[in-house]
Amino acid sequence: MPNDTIDNRVNLTIKNGIAHVSLNRPDKHNAIDIKMFYAISQTIKQLKVDRSIRAVIVEGIGEDFCSGLDIKSVMKSAKAPLQLLFKWLPWQANLAQYVSVGWRKIPAPVIMVIHGRCWGGGLQIALGGDFRIAAPDTSISIMESRWGLIPDMGGTLALRELLSLDIAKELAMTGAIINGEQALNYGLVTHVDEDPAEKALQLAQAICQQSPDAVAATKKLYNKSWWSKPGFALLRESYYQVKILLGKNQKIKTYNQLHQDEKTREFVKRQNW
Image (cartoon, rainbow, N blue to C red):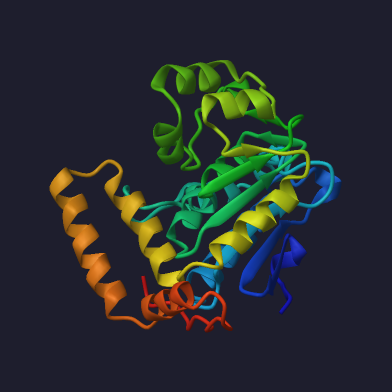
């Protein structure tokens, strides 16, 4: 089920319930221009409403995952900075932020496969995933300070969940470049593997064995409750569990668990989460 988005900046293929998303500007090291911003946004919105999606794998074609913002391309247009930064309400994501935080809204796990350079805006995109799997020699940097800027693409939401405050400040203030192993030690990536794409596929396939409703509800529960008041977390646990119990997939999962020697039953499309 191929789908070409704006100027082929992003490729999307769906196979066996797993959406494979590829940043497709290898001649520019997948640097983000305004067309790629729109293409990523369009892809996220498409995946968000597709209830057949069980997992999402995001990677970059070519030598690098994403080398960051294409400054020359964006700045040569007077309209582009306004398109990126404009928002109707201050607490909502603008286009620049949506390419990071939008992945959090997809009711399926998003796995980022990182190789080569993952700098600046590229890292902000990767931070939007639920999991990040990096090659050992991946080059990772919160690089905005090198341009006299702050990281403003939404990755702050993930950084506060993943890193201690002092480490996050140090990386952002210095623009230091670290490799995959260092990122793993900091908690910035989930796994380091010589073949991150294969590791991501194995993880996606393992998740696909579980109830899509339980997976979607867990993602939403943890994203909403990690920093909320305890009472709200307990409320969501109870509400989401009742919703799951009223659906078909929990019963299918229970049957498959109890009849592992028999042919498994296929899950139905997940509920709206």
